[in-house]
Image (tube, rainbow, N blue to C red):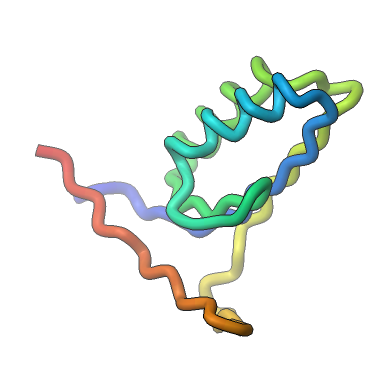
Length: 94
């Protein structure tokens, strides 16, 4: 049985374009959905720690900002425009 995953919203504001490109590339490997500098990620506690450690190596803590928010699973999303609800992906390792 795989560990439970929680939905997180990760938002970042990176001051320098080269660091921004690195962070964006790094987050692409983790995100299930998102737009520009906002990512929705289904994470275990260990994966959350890995992301924090990886981002710490990529940012300048004096100039950049990263916010990681755990979203309440009881809350129903409100969708506007042509948005669709992101489904929790099934994680299987063979």
